[in-house]
Image 1 (cartoon, helix red, strand yellow):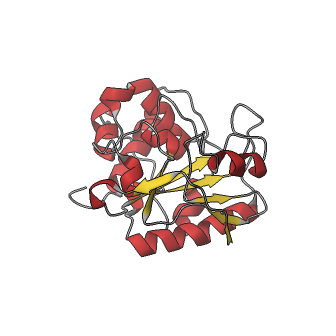
Image 2 (spheres, one colour; image 1 turned 60 degrees about the vertical axis):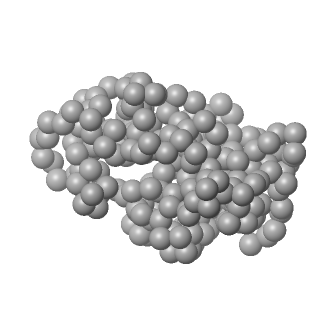
Length: 226
């Protein structure tokens, strides 16, 4: 791991403990450009970590500090996501600059890093999320090419088991129960975000049967009381 300190951070408000991990892509031409922006005081953005496509991990902000990665966002009623989360940026040009798969070396480094983060902070699996999940109207990252299933198989986050059941579920109520801000973001953007994460084969914002089944299966994985 390499240290690349960013000045863009502050104290966690209200002495909040970390209970969320948020993954991003950089949406920039390369990791060097992303590092420059994340360390630029004028940009006023940062993350705790950045992983380049070769798998090199850079630490920009200490985990006990509030990095500025989530922006205007909400999950499970929490609107100050920065104060309760660790943010990890993955170098990838994103949807606007030639979105591509995340290389094996990058994913391997992420699994090692994220595994340590969730262990240190006891982050629940259902609070390992993408930027699109917490800001559906603004963000698409890390997107449908990100391998959430591999992450879950490594014990980080959730991935549903498709048992083929035909399930009827209220989409707004189910998405809100999972944590999405359906009322604030709107149903269609929320469905797109859900599909990018848990139904990446087709991202169209349509609440078809497969999307409903996936949602029900993800909800089945939530701990009681969540």
